[in-house]
Image (cartoon, rainbow, N blue to C red; front, side, top):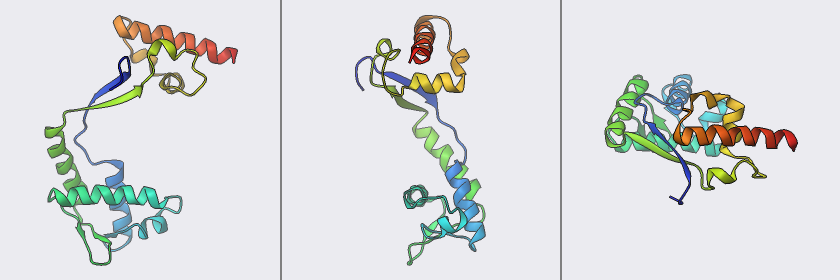
Length: 156
């Protein structure tokens, strides 16, 4: 992790993901089967890479003994209780990984106010979620830099 990077630490969620819900919906529409080829038929806007990410999730669940089975043709047989199994899988994962670290920016926060590129501060400003930041310590620094970033964007 770069020195002075801004990171987010979040607790993991022990629930079925949106990907699990999508797999379940595609499988229910296709006699309990999921594949990279079936996914775009259900959702024409889905790319092959997007469908492949769902296959990786199914493979991780299979390796953990959580249900879906890959067929000889490359498709997946998705059980009717897929979402319940996905939630159980997530709960097992949570025991091994209680928190998730993500790098918001490798650039020190003090340099972000005038950075001529999109930053995580822009996402915060767009979401309007700065009120969740405490007004002490690093939170105060974030509030100050968010205000400076807002002003810099207006000037641009």
